[in-house]
Image: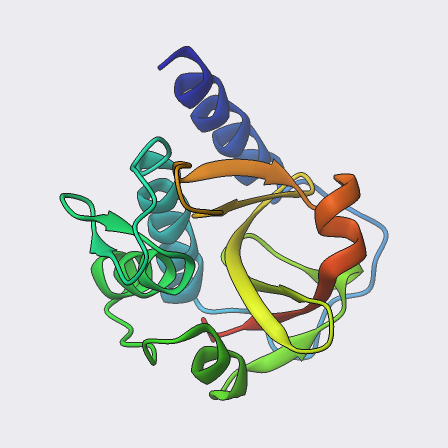
Length: 160
């Protein structure tokens, strides 16, 4: 529980600091308030599910989650967005692919060796929430961890 609270505090700080000034030029089109609100809702919903058991094919907090079930549940509940059910279908679905260095909180991250086999939700500060494996629980992991760094394929922005 202490890790969950610490994670929520970190995400809150990142979100509040994200509006601070920078020297980068302005983008042609700024995201709408709805997008920012949706991204915040997605982050808090996803982080709130940390500790939920993994279950293959699972897509509810009560029954547990697999990786695509977690992502689908969070985006449906927090942003009203219905995603396809499988990781591969979500990877092929609409949304702009993004380089790792351009990830923003609320973006999807995809992993695999030759093809997409796992996904999660980027929360900022180089970390993502996901449902990793049988016997595990929904958790926060660093993208730079040895296992995930080697398997990272791409990010995808589905909140416009």
